[in-house]
Image 1 (cartoon, rainbow, N blue to C red):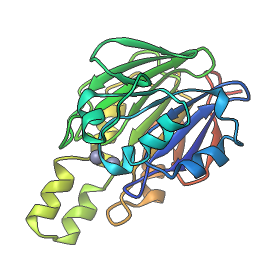
Image 2 (image 1 turned 135 degrees about the vertical axis):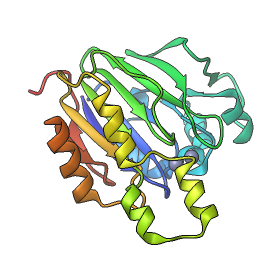
Image 3 (image 1 turned 180 degrees about the vertical axis):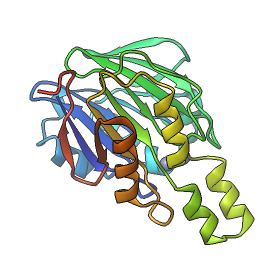
Image 4 (image 1 turned 60 degrees about the horizontal axis):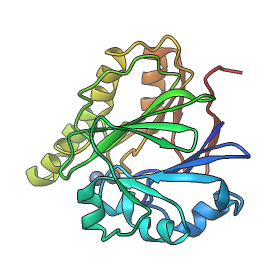
Length: 240
Ligand SMILES: [Zn+2]
Ligand SMILES: [Zn+2]
Protein backbone atom coordinates (compact mmCIF):
# COMPACT_ATOMS: atom_id res chain seq x y z
CA UNK A 1 0.00 0.00 0.00
CA UNK A 2 0.96 3.58 -0.52
CA UNK A 3 -0.20 6.84 0.98
CA UNK A 4 -0.58 9.71 -1.43
CA UNK A 5 -1.17 13.27 -0.26
CA UNK A 6 -3.19 15.35 -2.69
CA UNK A 7 -3.52 18.28 -0.31
CA UNK A 8 -2.91 18.93 3.39
CA UNK A 9 -3.73 22.05 5.41
CA UNK A 10 -6.31 24.81 5.50
CA UNK A 11 -6.35 25.16 1.68
CA UNK A 12 -7.69 21.61 1.26
CA UNK A 13 -7.20 18.07 2.52
CA UNK A 14 -7.34 14.82 0.56
CA UNK A 15 -5.37 11.63 1.08
CA UNK A 16 -5.40 8.27 -0.74
CA UNK A 17 -4.33 4.93 0.72
CA UNK A 18 -4.02 2.61 -2.24
CA UNK A 19 -2.36 -0.09 -4.30
CA UNK A 20 -3.11 -1.17 -7.90
CA UNK A 21 -6.34 -2.87 -6.88
CA UNK A 22 -8.02 -0.79 -4.20
CA UNK A 23 -8.11 2.67 -2.68
CA UNK A 24 -9.53 4.52 0.28
CA UNK A 25 -10.02 8.28 0.08
CA UNK A 26 -9.74 10.28 3.26
CA UNK A 27 -11.28 13.79 3.16
CA UNK A 28 -12.84 15.55 0.18
CA UNK A 29 -11.31 19.00 0.52
CA UNK A 30 -9.41 19.05 -2.79
CA UNK A 31 -10.56 19.52 -6.35
CA UNK A 32 -11.88 16.16 -7.59
CA UNK A 33 -9.92 16.48 -10.85
CA UNK A 34 -6.73 16.32 -8.79
CA UNK A 35 -8.06 13.23 -6.96
CA UNK A 36 -8.84 11.50 -10.26
CA UNK A 37 -5.40 12.32 -11.63
CA UNK A 38 -3.78 10.98 -8.46
CA UNK A 39 -5.68 7.72 -9.02
CA UNK A 40 -4.52 7.56 -12.65
CA UNK A 41 -8.23 7.88 -13.47
CA UNK A 42 -8.92 4.44 -11.99
CA UNK A 43 -11.99 5.55 -10.00
CA UNK A 44 -13.34 2.00 -10.01
CA UNK A 45 -10.80 0.86 -7.42
CA UNK A 46 -12.04 3.34 -4.77
CA UNK A 47 -13.94 1.60 -1.96
CA UNK A 48 -15.15 4.78 -0.27
CA UNK A 49 -14.38 8.25 1.04
CA UNK A 50 -14.14 9.11 4.75
CA UNK A 51 -14.79 12.70 5.87
CA UNK A 52 -13.98 13.95 9.37
CA UNK A 53 -16.15 17.10 9.44
CA UNK A 54 -18.01 19.77 7.52
CA UNK A 55 -15.31 22.44 7.08
CA UNK A 56 -14.63 23.22 3.44
CA UNK A 57 -10.96 22.25 3.62
CA UNK A 58 -12.24 18.71 4.36
CA UNK A 59 -15.61 18.46 2.64
CA UNK A 60 -15.93 21.11 -0.11
CA UNK A 61 -15.81 18.51 -2.90
CA UNK A 62 -17.86 15.73 -1.30
CA UNK A 63 -20.68 16.15 -3.84
CA UNK A 64 -18.31 15.48 -6.73
CA UNK A 65 -17.11 12.34 -4.92
CA UNK A 66 -20.72 11.14 -4.65
CA UNK A 67 -21.40 12.04 -8.27
CA UNK A 68 -18.49 9.82 -9.29
CA UNK A 69 -20.33 6.88 -7.66
CA UNK A 70 -18.16 6.72 -4.54
CA UNK A 71 -19.76 6.08 -1.13
CA UNK A 72 -19.13 8.78 1.47
CA UNK A 73 -18.85 8.09 5.23
CA UNK A 74 -19.41 11.11 7.47
CA UNK A 75 -21.35 12.36 10.47
CA UNK A 76 -25.03 13.23 10.00
CA UNK A 77 -24.14 16.84 10.90
CA UNK A 78 -21.49 16.91 8.15
CA UNK A 79 -23.96 15.55 5.58
CA UNK A 80 -26.52 18.19 6.61
CA UNK A 81 -24.04 21.07 6.55
CA UNK A 82 -22.77 20.13 3.07
CA UNK A 83 -26.19 18.99 1.83
CA UNK A 84 -25.05 15.44 1.03
CA UNK A 85 -27.97 13.13 0.33
CA UNK A 86 -28.69 9.80 -1.35
CA UNK A 87 -28.01 6.12 -0.84
CA UNK A 88 -24.24 6.59 -1.09
CA UNK A 89 -24.11 8.74 2.06
CA UNK A 90 -23.44 6.73 5.23
CA UNK A 91 -23.92 8.50 8.56
CA UNK A 92 -21.16 7.47 10.95
CA UNK A 93 -22.11 6.30 14.40
CA UNK A 94 -19.54 6.48 17.17
CA UNK A 95 -18.00 3.11 18.05
CA UNK A 96 -19.49 1.29 15.04
CA UNK A 97 -17.12 -0.50 12.67
CA UNK A 98 -17.57 0.03 8.93
CA UNK A 99 -16.26 -2.27 6.23
CA UNK A 100 -15.14 -0.10 3.35
CA UNK A 101 -13.82 -2.63 0.86
CA UNK A 102 -11.01 -4.39 2.74
CA UNK A 103 -10.58 -1.41 5.06
CA UNK A 104 -12.19 -1.59 8.50
CA UNK A 105 -13.02 1.83 9.89
CA UNK A 106 -13.92 2.97 13.39
CA UNK A 107 -15.00 6.61 13.89
CA UNK A 108 -14.62 8.37 17.24
CA UNK A 109 -15.56 11.93 18.23
CA UNK A 110 -12.80 14.50 18.75
CA UNK A 111 -12.68 18.11 20.00
CA UNK A 112 -13.05 20.68 17.19
CA UNK A 113 -15.30 23.76 16.83
CA UNK A 114 -17.88 21.70 14.87
CA UNK A 115 -18.80 17.98 15.20
CA UNK A 116 -15.72 16.06 14.05
CA UNK A 117 -14.40 12.51 14.21
CA UNK A 118 -11.06 10.77 13.99
CA UNK A 119 -10.69 7.36 12.35
CA UNK A 120 -8.91 4.19 13.35
CA UNK A 121 -8.41 2.27 10.12
CA UNK A 122 -7.22 -1.28 9.50
CA UNK A 123 -6.21 -2.99 6.29
CA UNK A 124 -4.30 -6.30 6.17
CA UNK A 125 -1.41 -4.58 4.33
CA UNK A 126 -1.21 -1.30 6.27
CA UNK A 127 -2.03 -2.67 9.72
CA UNK A 128 -3.80 -0.29 12.11
CA UNK A 129 -3.39 3.43 11.56
CA UNK A 130 -5.22 6.40 13.05
CA UNK A 131 -6.23 9.44 11.02
CA UNK A 132 -6.45 12.34 13.42
CA UNK A 133 -6.93 15.98 12.51
CA UNK A 134 -8.76 19.19 13.50
CA UNK A 135 -8.89 18.44 17.21
CA UNK A 136 -7.42 20.18 20.25
CA UNK A 137 -6.03 16.89 21.56
CA UNK A 138 -6.57 13.14 21.21
CA UNK A 139 -8.71 11.66 24.00
CA UNK A 140 -7.77 8.10 22.95
CA UNK A 141 -4.80 5.79 22.78
CA UNK A 142 -4.59 3.18 20.02
CA UNK A 143 -3.02 -0.28 20.37
CA UNK A 144 -0.98 -2.12 17.71
CA UNK A 145 -0.46 0.78 15.35
CA UNK A 146 1.72 0.21 12.29
CA UNK A 147 1.42 3.73 10.87
CA UNK A 148 -0.01 7.09 11.95
CA UNK A 149 -1.48 10.16 10.29
CA UNK A 150 -1.75 12.98 12.80
CA UNK A 151 -2.19 16.75 12.87
CA UNK A 152 0.63 19.05 13.93
CA UNK A 153 -0.96 22.44 13.20
CA UNK A 154 1.12 24.96 15.10
CA UNK A 155 3.95 25.47 17.54
CA UNK A 156 2.99 26.96 20.89
CA UNK A 157 6.18 29.06 20.91
CA UNK A 158 5.43 30.34 17.38
CA UNK A 159 1.92 31.42 18.44
CA UNK A 160 3.32 33.11 21.57
CA UNK A 161 5.83 35.13 19.55
CA UNK A 162 3.18 36.33 17.10
CA UNK A 163 1.16 38.35 19.57
CA UNK A 164 -1.97 38.10 17.38
CA UNK A 165 -5.33 39.46 18.57
CA UNK A 166 -6.83 37.22 21.26
CA UNK A 167 -9.77 36.03 19.15
CA UNK A 168 -7.42 34.77 16.41
CA UNK A 169 -5.15 33.07 18.90
CA UNK A 170 -8.10 31.47 20.72
CA UNK A 171 -9.58 30.15 17.48
CA UNK A 172 -6.42 28.18 16.76
CA UNK A 173 -5.92 27.04 20.35
CA UNK A 174 -9.52 25.84 20.62
CA UNK A 175 -9.73 23.89 17.38
CA UNK A 176 -6.32 22.51 16.34
CA UNK A 177 -3.52 20.33 17.67
CA UNK A 178 -0.11 21.83 18.43
CA UNK A 179 3.16 20.00 17.85
CA UNK A 180 3.53 19.88 21.65
CA UNK A 181 0.14 18.16 22.09
CA UNK A 182 1.00 15.87 19.18
CA UNK A 183 4.19 14.87 21.03
CA UNK A 184 2.20 14.15 24.20
CA UNK A 185 -0.24 12.02 22.21
CA UNK A 186 2.64 10.05 20.69
CA UNK A 187 4.22 9.56 24.09
CA UNK A 188 0.98 8.16 25.48
CA UNK A 189 0.98 5.38 22.88
CA UNK A 190 2.99 2.24 22.18
CA UNK A 191 4.97 3.13 19.06
CA UNK A 192 7.15 0.02 18.98
CA UNK A 193 5.58 -1.26 15.74
CA UNK A 194 5.04 2.10 14.05
CA UNK A 195 6.79 2.49 10.67
CA UNK A 196 5.61 5.91 9.53
CA UNK A 197 4.32 8.97 11.31
CA UNK A 198 2.84 11.44 8.85
CA UNK A 199 2.29 14.96 10.21
CA UNK A 200 -0.58 16.73 8.48
CA UNK A 201 -2.51 20.03 8.39
CA UNK A 202 0.49 22.23 9.24
CA UNK A 203 -0.46 25.89 9.42
CA UNK A 204 1.28 28.08 6.83
CA UNK A 205 1.85 30.84 9.38
CA UNK A 206 2.31 29.02 12.66
CA UNK A 207 4.36 25.92 11.93
CA UNK A 208 7.93 25.02 11.12
CA UNK A 209 8.08 21.82 9.08
CA UNK A 210 11.77 21.02 9.54
CA UNK A 211 11.68 21.59 13.31
CA UNK A 212 8.47 19.55 13.66
CA UNK A 213 9.93 16.64 11.72
CA UNK A 214 13.19 16.64 13.68
CA UNK A 215 11.38 16.90 16.99
CA UNK A 216 9.11 13.91 16.32
CA UNK A 217 11.90 11.83 14.81
CA UNK A 218 14.14 12.42 17.83
CA UNK A 219 11.27 11.55 20.14
CA UNK A 220 10.02 8.39 18.37
CA UNK A 221 12.69 6.92 16.07
CA UNK A 222 9.98 6.31 13.43
CA UNK A 223 10.07 7.53 9.82
CA UNK A 224 8.55 10.99 10.09
CA UNK A 225 7.04 12.70 7.06
CA UNK A 226 5.54 16.13 6.62
CA UNK A 227 2.49 15.85 4.36
CA UNK A 228 3.21 17.84 1.23
CA UNK A 229 1.01 18.09 -1.82
CA UNK A 230 1.82 15.30 -4.28
CA UNK A 231 3.91 13.29 -1.81
CA UNK A 232 3.66 9.49 -1.98
CA UNK A 233 5.18 7.06 0.53
CA UNK A 234 5.14 3.33 1.23
CA UNK A 235 2.51 2.71 3.88
CA UNK A 236 2.73 -0.90 4.99
CA UNK A 237 2.53 -2.98 8.11
CA UNK A 238 6.13 -4.09 7.70
CA UNK A 239 8.94 -1.65 6.92
CA UNK A 240 9.84 -3.56 3.73
ZN1 LIG B 1 -9.05 21.72 8.65
ZN1 LIG C 1 -11.89 22.12 10.68
